[in-house]
Length: 339
Image (cartoon, rainbow, N blue to C red; front, side, top):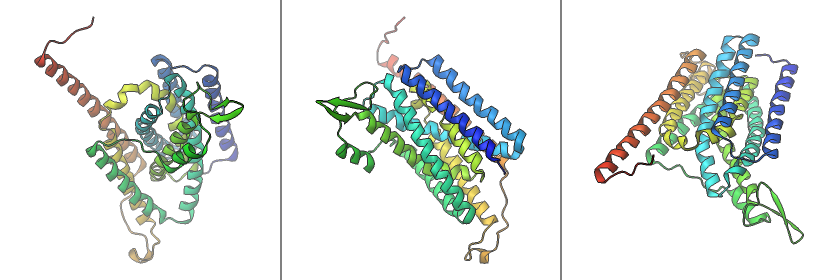
């Protein structure tokens, strides 16, 4: 897939422009976005991604468009799963909701920069060493197994990493958050506020999530342009989605299971592609192995069906659990109804 330099330039300028507008909006008016505001922004970014996919279809054809949509949907689903941890981080550091927008946006900008570096390194490695697909595939299969185990154990907690502990120990820090400010002057000395630690927590956490998401999308496409733009569109609007979903996150019980199935599927796809182009001496004498190839249309259909099924089953279970709780409450005593 050949992408002219001017298309890269226009795409980057447009995406940076959207981020600047987002930063200006948040900086000028810190607030808790309403459901209507969050919904409109999420619709805007999703529509933008769909239109971009249509543009890919027009310029490069249906195969590349399918790769973009499959990659974007996978990364978007993984980003929704990341929101569970973001909620825990915000709660752990007691960030007031009206200031969470700024923290989230800066965390997302850091994530975009780090993912850009990861994508560049991954693309260069795959270009030179096709056997990297074996490693990526094995890693995704391990991640899928880990997600399933996590769902069984019901242990989704946030643990401070070494960088966060180091920042707490080394940086001069105030005890409390001072509005939306990242620094505060006390007795003539400049101190950081805990919001800086929150941003570090969000950025480093997303970096760990990128270890899953970047290999996953390289299993769907090798085009750096599609890998990068799919990641960007998955992260754009994540801030508004955080406020839109709210308590709904707790109801997506089987999302991790659905993501585990998707990552496992992509892991198998990566291994099959590695076998198809094999040049590892101790596998089939270094010759390619004739294995079936999974077409992109099937990958897209599989991802949509799996994630959609996980979401629907989760919401049905949540509704049934709520009804069961009401029935048990009615059996145990009168239920006070508020009109």
